[in-house]
Length: 313
Image (cartoon, rainbow, N blue to C red; front, side, top):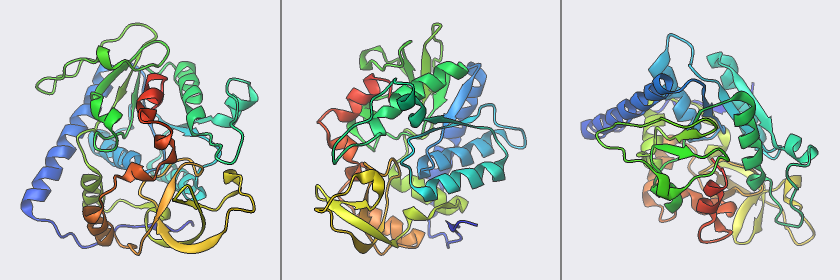
């Protein structure tokens, strides 16, 4: 059995904080039920990260004891953290729900995308093509994601119901008003909607909710010793996917990951926080957002917005 960190931790939370989490939870459950009511073939995009794991818990609260009204969809780059893939498979066995996996390697083999070359090559941007193909193959008309507004400025612009055109593209100028918690999911044939039930949550809210709900997470979220290299000022997990050469010096450090993505673009932070309360205190003291450790967001000033316009999550 893979080591999972089970959050059996004491809860240090006052009534005001608890009430606030109840409000966030209630809003997210309402949004999930709106998706189930408004769309014919929704799906939940699952990365194995803490936000999508939180969505699964919220879906359990929204739809149990029945089955989820949607499958989980994972876009697998082939360069994922092994701990994340093992967690995904064990979770699916536990919750007994359907998982659909789209493989970036298939998109490469079919000639739909070209793998990047060079020392800083990554498959992260190639996920868009695989995602759009997976949506088209299964006819999904809504895709639920774990993006939050506090993560990045492009995500701060996006509404909870975000309409994408027939090419999967996002146009900020076509966003619909969302007044009094009324969400308009009406779309034309070929369009789909990305839905973000925890859009109004912060990183700290997610961790407080994980603590309250005693949600298990992949062990990489907690401080552990790991072989790493330092590249472009960022601590990266040492792996063949990084195209390492003689300039990359491998050392062992105690690190953890604040966000989980493709190994080639997800950096770690040095940390001693191996308990959830310590992580929460660390986040409170941090002056850098969790996506500050994502190399794919540093390509340009508008990197995330450009990817979203192309069909990214």
